[in-house]
Image (cartoon, rainbow, N blue to C red; front, side, top):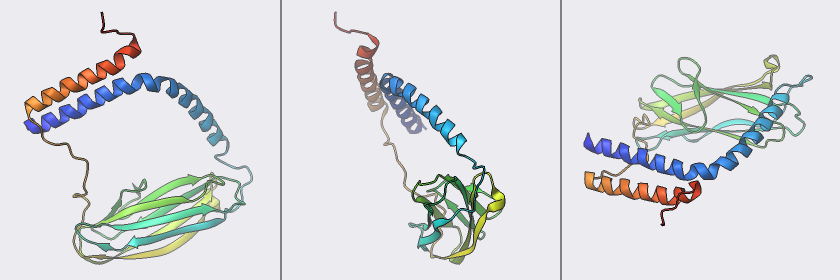
Length: 223
């Protein structure tokens, strides 16, 4: 328990020191970014829906499975690539839905959300001339054996779902040799430290932060 508290304390202090160091530097650019963000949001709102849309054409709309063998150390994978035809003038909404059997799950990579029992979906907007949009997801399974994932792609002019186009029935077969639920994926760890080492680190971080920030706020330690 003490070790866990020590690790937490290091993270909190490091975050505070880094925040105090970066805040004066980020204040100016933040104002400019805020102004730019407002302008960008206005532009996005203006082109979110076209008055006279037409059925969009896709140069590329595909899903594929570059990794179909699942072991305890390796997850499966489904990737996708999407690109609008250069004649498209309206933003296009794209929805990708994947259906998995019981015991399987998809996460990581792109922003996946639940669409009901055994289904996940990822929805995004493509702007004209935006280039290739990539999609990815890791496939995990509690069960072993040959398991199948099916996928559908649907796309339509933003604001006009009645004009949707569909690509249905895409199938991906996975060979699950060992269970892999994704719980053992490597992450960023923090080494265990003693209380004395923790105290030294806290003092050092505090001094570094004060020495860097003090001149920026008008504090002079020399008399």
